Amino acid sequence: MSGSVERRPDGSFALFIDGDLQFDSQDEHIYHEGLILPGLLAAQKRCDGPLDVLIIGGGDGLSAREILKSDSINRITLVDYDPEIVQMSLGDFSKLNKSSMADPKLTINCTDAWEFVEEALNDGEQFDLIVVDLTVAADADGARFHSIDWYENLYQLLSPNGIMSVNGVSPHQTPLSYWSIFNSMVKAQLVVRPYRVAIPSFFSRGYGSDWGFFLAAKNDISQDEIHSLNLENIEQKQFLTSLNQLKEMFLLPDELYPLQEVAQPALEGSEILIRYFHHGALTGWTGKVSDSLLMNLDELSIPEADTGREVLPIEISTALANAITFQTESEIEEFADPKQVLGDVLRLMPSLEPSQTPDMLADFLSDPSVFLRSVDLSALISRILKRAGSLPPQLVAELKLLSIKLADWTGDQLSLMRMGRNVVTLLALLMVIGNLLYPDMVYAKGDGGRDGARAGDNRGNGEYRDRNGRRRRGDGAWWNEGTSTWVYDDVQKRGPGRVQNRVPELEIKEYGGGNKGNNSAQLPQSNEDKKQTLVMLTNDLEEAVSYQNLLKDELGQYMLQDNSTVSFGMHDISRDEAIRLTQRLIDKNSLKIAMLNGLITNLDEA
Image 1 (cartoon, rainbow, N blue to C red):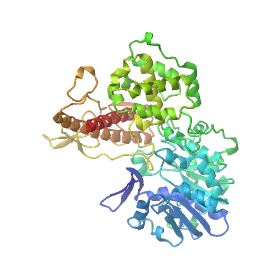
Image 2: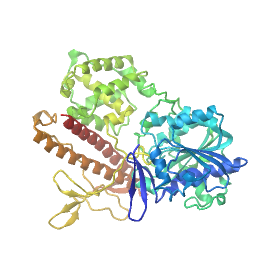
Image 3: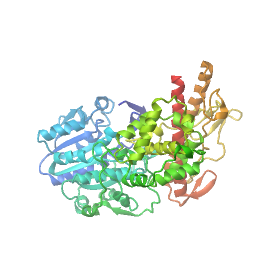
Image 4: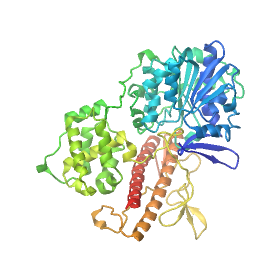
């Protein structure tokens, strides 16, 4: 991991790990009080004597700071894998964390949390308060810390009346991921109460209008228990200062609850949590909320756990088995009909996200050479075949055959497309399956909501130069040298209470000195051509990334609006439609970023 600190003239700062926001000193107290205080207060009330506390993650010392505000602490054991962050907590962050990491009650362990928990279980340890303050998972290794197996271990590590506080994800931005974590905890026999807070710095970077947590125990957590907690036992609070605030944290949108029944929990090895990050945000919110403390956990319907060995959900696998029919060689026909191929794939995979699939396939069919250039087909097929337990045998056979052909493949993408619609349909299906399972192999990571603040990469909206050398700002304005002013192309700046999509959609252009008529985006051969093309590609990539940041900002603004109608470009449309269209632009632009990255990589290696 690589940590970096963004410092400001006013003395405030933000911590990033691998480009992902961890906290902003201006509002981190909202996150840390929200994560710690409900569980700490409940544990104090439930348990006799001073508390034994375990913090998993939290190497910045800010969770420990909140816990040490209580005079009912016996010892704190902190486990964090990253010694760099721990070192920062003892130095740069010591003023912010009140020197919590140097407190004699606290013991620091720089080791793998999974291994530590297993060793603690072998030693018969138990804790009255367990705080899981880990960053949002970015891969299968991180996702295991939200698996049933993980929470079963924590269940055993929790004292009989103990409380567990868990950092989750944004319920609004990634609702299926949120409920997947919840369902994994319930399957581990924990009593779980979900809650949330709004954190301005998370929202401003596109990580969701709220952030979710979970309170868990071995026995019931009732509304009466939470409503009777005494916040006066904790001093120096900045955010959670009243009982009404505490109650409101457990009020969730009514539209969120039905998704709990469809979100699969996970066993160790599953990547379902990562896949759910790419599903849409919660839309159509009426403003009605219900208290999660009143949920009847005994009546919950929880789907079967994802094992990590199946490629597709059961309903998609069944549809494939029942409907898949490949053409014979004698039936080779014109392949570049997007509607026809889209119909084939949607017939095979009816559960796909409709707003994303048509655009991806249209881009694939309009210029397969450019699309496939950014994808390692052999690696993608290999990864899917390793987890092909739920795929129909005929599809597995076709993928194996294609894998054999690729072994002798010279890299000419168009040669694959000349094999007829059967191969085109297979490739399109492969793109879609790959995007479900391994989006980073098909799309570049591009949405900050996935794994925001404790998730996604959002680099800000600074000044840059476009491909024409013109100065541009992140808000879409360009510098007019003649008037020495910043100018907007086709829309005006956002006014009070108005949200406008300010930047026209970018286009992927052809590059290089090859035959442009074949639409294959050939890369140039001479060093001079390569240098010029690399400059063009890099400029276009910077422009696309800046555009992506603008789109995320626009999406966040739409989600904040209470009005049913908002301004989208030069038109007034419904808020829900603006959210849908902006998310669609984000998905398409992610593909363009992936293409440009692929072209730049190929050019560097040429």
